[in-house]
Length: 352
Image (cartoon, rainbow, N blue to C red; front, side):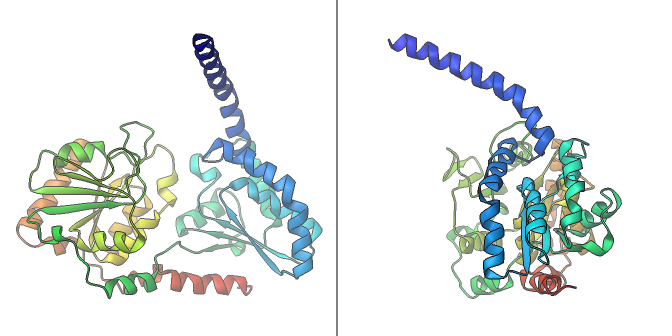
């Protein structure tokens, strides 16, 4: 009996893989979501709730609706609201690129262009994204506006008022810190693959590398001079940033996402005042921000470049001149605070 169940389970798993292999490219062609299942789930959600949403808009007298994407299939709600709620102002709010992610002209691309007509305003998450939406996607410049995700100045000030540094603050080693989500898998499709960096750091006893927010088996472990620390509160993550010498950012993809995206933690890195080391492509927006605001250094995720960059940082640290790698003060990047970005959104909501 047990063998028969095991055999059936193997058959089911094989069948599931075959179906997934067939359906995944079809679903991606239709929806082009980062997670191909997301398109189906959210499409079902729209069919189930669109009437209730439109009725609620009428009952309450809502004047402006913000549709935040992803999931990108939610753009279809714009048409439903437009047709059933005359006079309601519709704003599409992009927090990730859609067609611009991989620039494939599939059904999702034509869907995106088609539904632009229902938006009174399209808000993007970076100026680079805004420019390409105008030039590549043909969106009217008058419809577009940028609101960066930014950092919370209030949260940072609350944290800075507390002196709760940990014991390893005084360690006589160069301290590299990465905070945020990371998958500790050495795969080509892992766009935050840290293994080249880990291999190089392990060779240099004067350096310690901390990963903050690890959710896997390595959580709360130390391997050689690499520390794996589990999930922490936002306040604690700020504390780790403040105690670091250099903050690590990794975004290494084969698509165009790095050209547009700034990770949420990168804004906090900017606010921390610490040196940032971005590992990614030269055309990455985070690389450009490092250069523009003189926030630190960048390199590709290649062993030779990582080794060279780390040696450069280490020499500055040994001479006690590490601060020379960042000349931007906090006031210069205050435009990226959520408080300032929210003011821009208020203007957009007011019709500007």
